[in-house]
Length: 111
Length: 114
Image 1 (tube, rainbow over the protein chains, first blue to last red):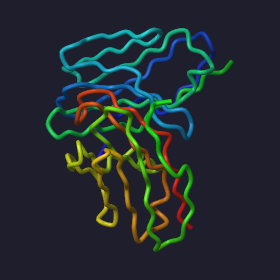
Image 2 (cartoon, rainbow over the protein chains, first blue to last red):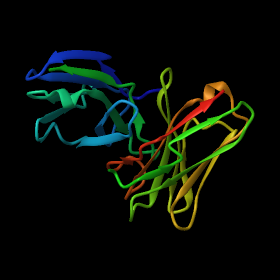
Image 3 (spheres, each protein chain N blue to C red):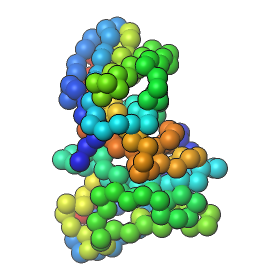
């Protein structure tokens, strides 16, 4: 079963707007990662946030982690058409060597 | 380009057949992971190898097997193929094992079973 669940399943915005995607998970984690996948291509790692961190930034990306609510959010600011992709959260429970992916959020940025 | 290579890019075969997918990890990465991605199941972890040894197993069918060779490349063998095995198969690699760090994904092999 999927550990992470992204919300919403699909998001459509205009260029220049911000996009926020959420991820909820069920068990305690060592870290949580976000990946991007362009249609039919391999996944690309975006950012990793450890369980003792609350917020992390990378360029136009901002990730937050709330371990008490078992949730994370990914914010993409000033979105571009090139940001159109599926975004996945992945959790590392720290005990079984597995990284478990959610089903993803499909983001469409309209020019 | 992630540095992970996968061959072939596309594979079309018939039910009941056997295929082998190949993966070369990034230079220096000891861990190799295999994933299956389909529309209905999403991205499913299949199996992980670390420096030649099996480290973790996921939702891998008994008809599927994998191995990692001394030069660290890996092969995923799929046998007695069924229509439902049609999917994208990804290989990923990382320096460390498990989910400790980022994984670098290859471009995938698209398998179509007719």
